[in-house]
Length: 558
Image 1: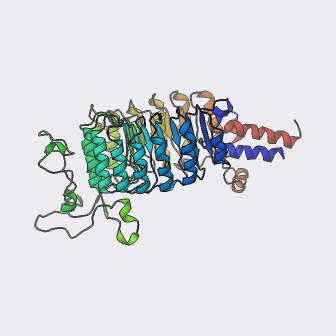
Image 2: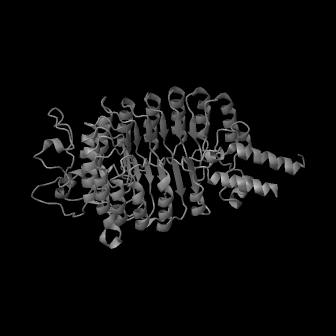
Image 3: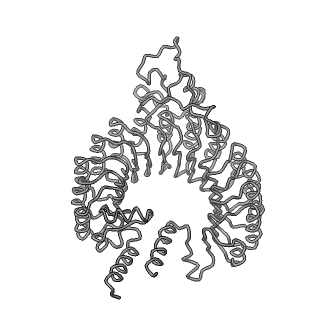
């Protein structure tokens, strides 16, 4: 029937709304950009490509080494190609080697290469590096979610020397100490690298100090992603000391790095991560005679960290070493998780550097780290004096007392424009404080409140919306909203025309709950909001048309 066909089209539109299937430019008659996901026939698609092709994106196409050979052969006569993305395929080592001759062409204009999640190991990386060494125009390389070890990383770094690379993504690989040393050398010597992503690579304290020392000497890096690595408080201290000398870094991603914890281990293990004392310029902590007495040591004894008295003559009994790289923890029997002790000296050092006028950091992502009230209070005070514009505190275990500091920070921080405190419990008292902050703050453009257990606490926040004309996005999805809350939201949206996005809202009535159980992946926009916020919720215009069709079909009208 027509209703089922429209529902199928709606589901397809929601599935591809993130750009997995984007042929808008091709529909307009431009064939210089092709972006296709899951094509029916790769050879037929390659035969239809024009000579003026500039972008080719084939994701989830099931391309193996034979398909890579066909792609390399088809693109050999496309001199205007600047972007090639073959992510989420099965190229493996032979496929990576098949693309190497395409990079060796003298007239190659390729600037963007994405081979993420293609099961490429070090052997394929070494073969690919031969082509990268002769590709002079390449600026962006993405090799995330592969199986690359130190040998492959070293070959890529050698190929990147004396090249004008601006972005390098090596997330979710199997890099260890030698690979980190090579990456640190590239960062130290590069004058063009602007973005470096090392997410989820098992970087421990020593690896973090290598990267921090290199970034300290770099003058071009703008974005650094070290998320999901066991840095701990010692690694955060090293990064904060780097911020004391680096004045160009603008974005720092520290999500899930255990920044409020230290490892319980002997002092020798921690001190081994420090640079040699004979070269003061390589030390991550700035040498300052005035602050040497007040600044805590970067690596205190583990006994002192735990609150016990440490004696040089009596070594500690714990022999737990820092976290091993990802390549060394593939088997559980060779690795036991290190014991963690809560300590905030790394966060305090970071707050100290954020409050200084010379710090240029604008994006700070600290989600998935458990903060205590003491650390969070100092962080909020530092944000008020800093130039940070985007702050993420998703799932940070913020208590009611900590939420008071967050609300005060929102109301007083002049440079802050985006705050995300999703997945934190917000009580009625905290909701009232956040509502007062929204009334005072006139530069905030985005506020994330997803799954914050807001039910009755949503009322004061909605009451503050008409008094804030700067807010463009407020994410309210996943909260326990009732029918009266949606009616209140619709009334407040009539008085505030600046809000453009409300997130994914789901009706909680019993009738819609039964439909949601039957259609698991279908989002339902309440009718009371749809008439007012038809453009404020993703896909709301299409849902509004569906609702009108259903009403007309049920009433028998046209």
